[in-house]
Image (tube, rainbow, N blue to C red; front, side, top):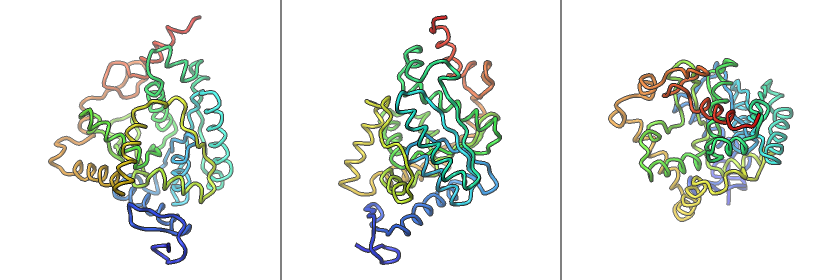
Length: 312
């Protein structure tokens, strides 16, 4: 099997593209896919300051690496959730990458520790507020990522969601006909109101397997294990279903998600823009000032409940 591009011996085969690449051409392919995503979705430019949400996993570290190599000004934020062993391991991976790779590009790493701020880790907080751990985690991370981006003056917040993630999320939203989430699902969400940072997903054209290969090829040390709190999450089931379809028909995930984006981009599919919908529904939280559709945002409600549940 030879490289589709340079005809030397190939190192990785990509059935959904009916292509194969050597190491050098594969790196070029990955960088090109991210560059296409940024350009087609008008995510950001070289003058923007980007904050990458990193977890220690392959996707977020690969994203940080790619953006730096493409010449963007990209710093990162790591939120330590206080999950015993897992958080310690992911923290070490992030710090090692920041010191050995990102530092050479002049990039900075910001760290936020949930346990230091709230007096409890994510598992304890979830029990205190009687919410699923993944739901509690999502609320905390969204809030802290947006807050850090605004406070530190970043134009854009980038996350490492890949094609597998977005296709699985789309499948879940379609199965339950969650119209509100379908309207908001996309690789680029504008900073539609003051207090919200623009959110982008530059890896939506790449799969988990491709990003894992990129990390191995570029010697990026990442945490391999899934978060122990994610056990039983429906997203994992949706990914498993899509993986089976992909095995039988390569390109299924791409056709499914990219087809959705194509339909979504048509004017008749969405009479109101995301910015128009947000501006009509959002206003500052009375407790913290960040945008919310309610009087008090979900993060402040959750932390208030946790405080009343913690013994003094």
